[in-house]
Length: 583
Image (cartoon, rainbow, N blue to C red; front, side, top):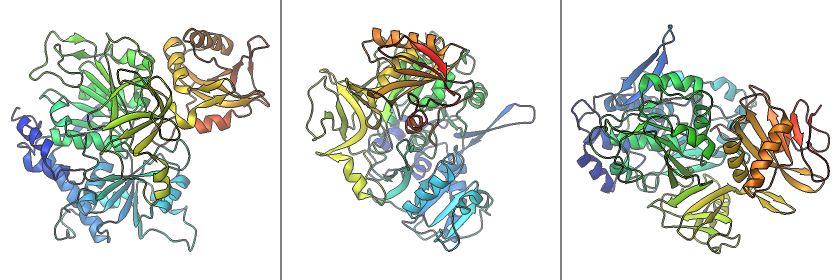
């Protein structure tokens, strides 16, 4: 590696592979100790000047250490001690990571909270966790949720107080930074809240690192590589990518805004070779005119959380350039990029969650890939066994649909303050991922739905993600994104789709196209289609996932009293297709 590049030499990365003390609680210290270029810019933030130009600012490993210690001095001065859970409710980007580094260096536990979480929900969540203090970008909204006389955290302060703390003021405890044991809890990560009040997933020091070791030699990290991280950095995905890139010394820009209008100009300025995100950003980047200039150097897109849809993936892999001579699906050849590179890029679609500890399944897509709806590939090496189980915990034969389950040391120790909830996800020695899947004879898995979203119709179960896959891919002339949910009609639960459109189309015509595509694919057809008006978004959780429970509630009366203002087409077996705007 070059002396002007922060990328860690291969020998350093190989050392991280087998270091028994390395984990989520001390990865910065290991990077500082072994990277020969700790003063070179590594983690980038951005701002926009008065002329509208994007300005980039790089932070070295030494800069990250100084910020960590500054924040840790404030926390220590305010009584934070080993094992204390502290809430961090700040805007996504680099700031949540700095707070995490400071709290873990004190042996405390960062309860990272996405600032998009509704304030009443956040208050309930933090009461459940039992935080000793709260640092927030808008502490007044949270403070207003506490009634007079109600127990409050010891401190509830504006995040600017920590950022503005005199870096020379206050002391650090003896033994700083804290030396974690393998099972020490270092963070609490909340779920998206798609099924209600968010769950609090525990992240342990060693558990969160297990499975990521191979990234030290398999993750693309050449002198020319640059990663744009659009993950929510209050989420396990954001923390996972920063842990990886800090150890690799891979230049990374973190963003708090995932919308295309904000992302595209930053991409154009930073010129990343890799982009990591949840599906939410990829949906927007795949819509409208292709971001050709911004994605000119992209060779790999990384998706995690929910698996992405083919209709969006196929548009993104047409962008960018790949070095030719790929050896392994996850590995780029060593050395400079090939001037005769292949047109287009790779999309690595991972299925994972905070509970799984990382993406445990991965499917690689290129412009040459054949379409294979809902394929998530084979489990990664850290998975001891993946299976499809029935409700009793028995393994189902290949081809049958059931509960996706894994045995892996990367799984969470459980849910904070909720052993009963933890037990509901454990079955016959497996961790239930909350997904419905099937496995083929060659060991590949297909992700069909979330267990809570399956529609149990009179004709049998309908898997909503399968229907979404076809509608998005086959109706891309008018659909931006679609979400399928079950609502009740006179016969029982039936599937309806709620779609965001990119052009004006009559609901009846849209439903005809969608149902024709579904029939051709051999899937259940839609009982109704709702078109969202321009500018109307899906209800999203704090991590950007569609809240299907909100859609089910909103359209629960669709077939009885209708829904005010909704553009709807309805089909049934006895009457011709009809369109109406419910009032």
